[in-house]
Image 1 (cartoon, rainbow, N blue to C red):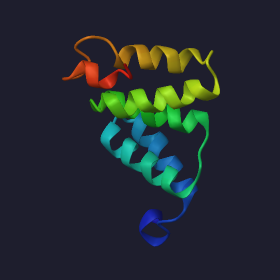
Image 2: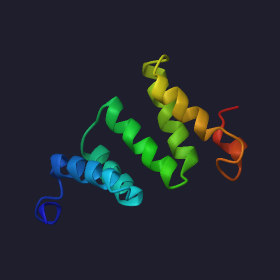
Image 3: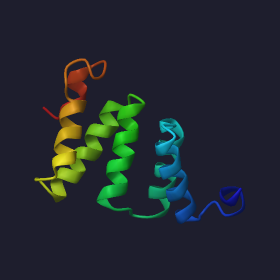
Image 4: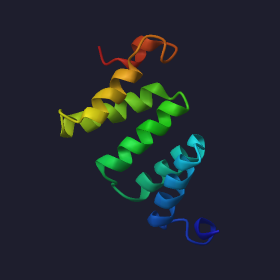
Amino acid sequence: ALLTQAPACIDAHCIRSRISMELQDYPVAAHSWEQFHSLAKGSPETHRCLAQCYQQIGRWKEAADLFRDLLVNDAEDGDALMGLGLCELPGSCPGFRECSPN
């Protein structure tokens, strides 16, 4: 209801995203994180959450791109390294090579 009345409320998008992730409703969570990031810059944590949602719904290329962006800022980010590795496993996505930068 709050998002209907105040669609630009970034806190509401963030809360909805986190609740949707807890409920494992990853399509809704991903959409809410996208809305959040269209209104606010976000943080490495919020970008990581969006990447994880993308993984859960099979959007491997978008997830890999976000993990790569996180690694540009922190090459030692273990969660981003693991997330990117999962994205690049053979069989993770159709057209696996398309997910790789090389």
